[in-house]
Length: 212
Image (cartoon, rainbow, N blue to C red; front, side, top):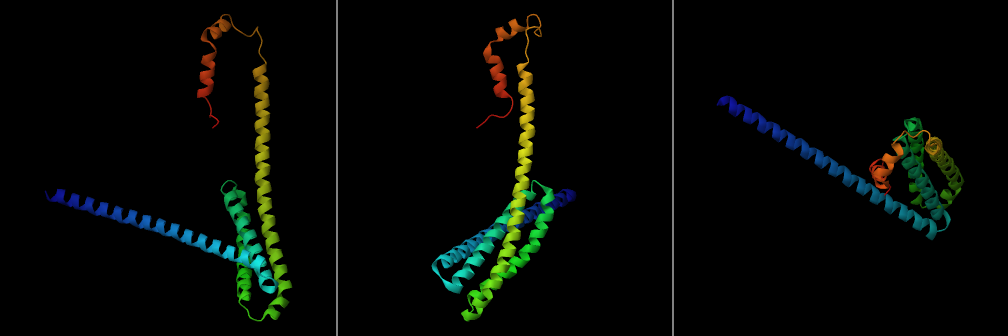
């Protein structure tokens, strides 16, 4: 009896531990989802504000907004392209590492541009614009180069795979057309005719993947 009570107690503790673990995991997943939503909302608000400033303001404020918008757009597009590509092509891991180093410079520049937006001394900021513009162009050029190289690589792999597939299909199509009457065994043609056209069609529909 005592052993049974002990086993039940252990099972109860185990179920409680599993319940706590599942709850913690669920709360963590929900928190990560909320964090992603908040980050996305902040990003959208920031980009919308920068677009409004770049089109609605002139002078130093408008140019700072244009630089930040160009920088953020290029870096985010490259980040998305590399993260999507590395899942299928592990050789992009080095490119991802290089982009992380580039991102450190990009984030530093973005913070500097953001601080200068609040700088009241517009004359001093105007004097810094050529240097800021050059830094932005260097960073975005490197980011664009990585992004387009990754896309060209993915497109080349897709083209190579398509070429190989086309060659295989051409071989198969040629083999299907090499029929002769002499190759048919006695009774083969009669058996095929007795089955009717529907039998082969049914097997063809069952095999492979249907096109949606």
